[in-house]
Image (tube, rainbow, N blue to C red):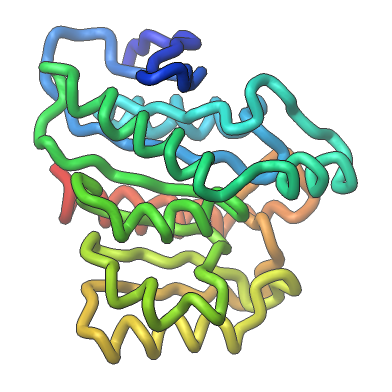
Length: 229
């Protein structure tokens, strides 16, 4: 599929959000999906994922939460993440939701959100927001002390993708998430890939696990197809 890709900027009240946009090169209407970065920033991997989403018939957008900064080393990524306020990041993502909803080409008027690592946690929080119709999280989670109140607010169908060998997202936390989603009757599916480390979807890193990544991608598209299109 031929795509149009570009960096754009939008926002209100002095908060201009830069973002990478990928959309089918046609005059048709499409659903909208937001792709949320890992702690590295809006790098070429996240742009590639955004294009891959668009190739499936979506208007896809990834906000630049670090305003141009991209880390290569974990220490730099950690600093960028720690310097970022969660509420500011959620405001940026909500600005993306509103931007997409304002476009005549976006149908339905309900947006999908997916994110990785840090972006997975932000995607989880976006499942509690109005006008978010579906949520996919790759190895992210609510904080344990937020779990009960956060899950009560979830309204978007919630797909979780996790690695069994992820030292950063312990299995007990994933189990707590799943149990709480069940307790509150939320539409969800939790997938745990055996022996998969953190960031197993990222094909630019040694953590990449091709078979698991392909299966997770298939599940993600099926989730969007079921609850968004």
